[in-house]
Length: 190
Image 1 (cartoon, rainbow, N blue to C red):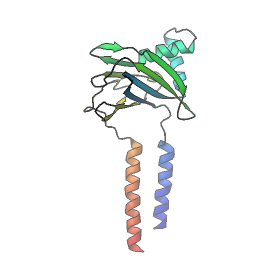
Image 2 (image 1 turned 135 degrees about the horizontal axis):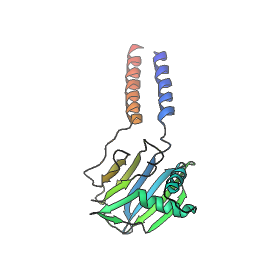
Image 3 (image 1 turned 90 degrees about the horizontal axis):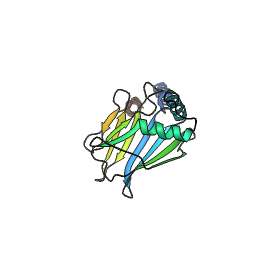
Image 4 (image 1 turned 45 degrees about the horizontal axis):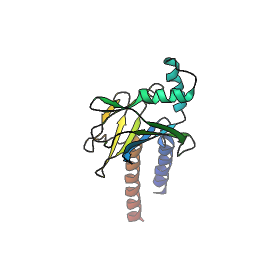
């Protein structure tokens, strides 16, 4: 039985090492604060590469701040009834991890419900890019929305959210289930 437990633990270590983190993923939070929509984009270190690759195709000036602003305006867009919202503030800070940065955006709107979000950030350099958005609605509900190259837009609604169980979550659930079954079987045999 100890061999089985060892094999399960070995497999789990291999799984977590392989799928522990998506290095190109962008994580965004959207919430209303102080009568404005506040967006925090946690971006990976490859984000600079994406901005520069995009700027090279658009004949952008060499100034990174201008490139960043243009890249965000062209690839992170919010709409209300076909009218595009424009960020009135952009700030860049160090991220929550050593290999990331956080971009803060502010918009003049007081409601998230009914907004259309288009987020194509890093789609220009990663064919399988996935951008995850955690949205805090006024009614206390949270929504999770994901954009990918095959689904670049989502409508923000507390009742309409993306439900996407990652492979990592599924494998973790399966491993935990088998581990518990193995422990129960072991305790009954010995």
